[in-house]
Length: 262
Image (cartoon, rainbow, N blue to C red):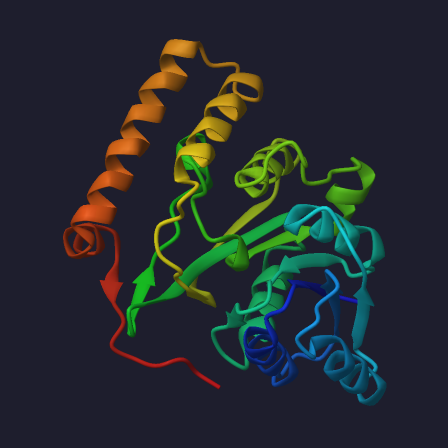
């Protein structure tokens, strides 16, 4: 199995339908879809079971968990592909040939450990093209959306990598940092891999900054002063984004003139 697409969901049938549709139309077919449901009561589970009975590439596990990252860890344990893509409920691939293009690029590079690319964001009804930064910017935060990151399962399983449940918002960043420290073959793709529907500024953003402070201190071994400088920088950046979103979007994004390909 080449790709394992790990989808975590809880009471989001509408988003789940969008995600699974984007997976089902992929032209490259060597993949499995591992859906980890947290015990939905909105009709998602019977719909998923019926779908899985008709499509052998869909695997469904439903039951209680300790939240998003615990469910993603469950997906890691159960998936068997050579590469993992975390495409959670509501996320979608940009086009029907997204996996095919990733596969072609991976073969040219002789199976890289880590692949990442750009993202299309849907913000207030408008599509924006968000270019990924270099992985060298990982100290500053997530340099690309995790939906547009592809991880080697060999690196993950040989090193028993999991999402740290001590972090409720920044565990994906912590996971990616530790993964990159073990990766020597990294491939940057210059096209959008996924579509992300922005949900606004999180009311727990301050908690996210606190978690980032701890990660910079524990993983990067930065001083408290340096971690504090990053804290203030990101706090001000978020303030600008929340108060003047049009100004923030002007510098961070490029409006996307095209449309999502299917």
